[in-house]
Image (cartoon, rainbow, N blue to C red; front, side, top):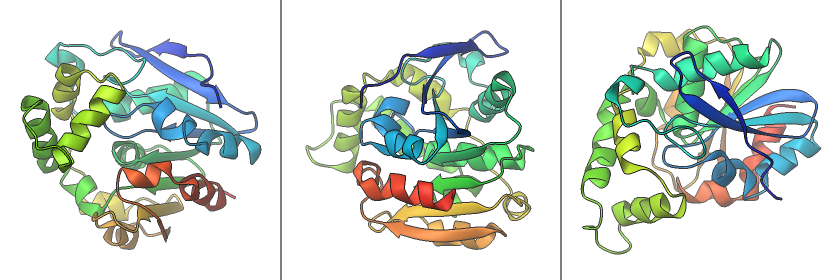
Length: 248
């Protein structure tokens, strides 16, 4: 499937943000992972096309500092929880009142943060995250800080080398991505437990994140495993099918 045309809108701080739309029907916002893009996460492996065939209008933003969105190099462009603020503003910009939402990794944490801050989608799907990714988000930045500040030094085949290789394939901006890490915020466990939106938690069988603990913390949740590692599960057709099934 060819990537649809890029559409843009302006966040309240003047940063230009991009998104793509596939299909028509029930609105579904899908947020990609850290370093990735909407095209890589959702279009390249057929997930968006499958969801469109199931009756969804799939709206796929490129997060701030990613893809076709602006990548500011000013620290002021990355206040605490800025990705959630962008997501909530996009819901308002699109005029959505009855919609579903999903995300992978950083995108999934953004979905949880949206609901904690008052978003009321009918259903949500969070993929590739565990409880620690949500309640201890700031501490999780250290790994990526290490990668982004030591590019070119990692042993071939190592996890860090793989992240760096992926960064190159998507033409990522290390400086902007490093600044974005400063915006990650922790979510109190009590706030996670207060989310009432029915939420499907999806995780790769070889992903070491504490996804079952996250599902246990969310009061109205389901838990599903699909094949793959954290990075590999994105490439599996089971990801799109599981999201579609969860949103039936």
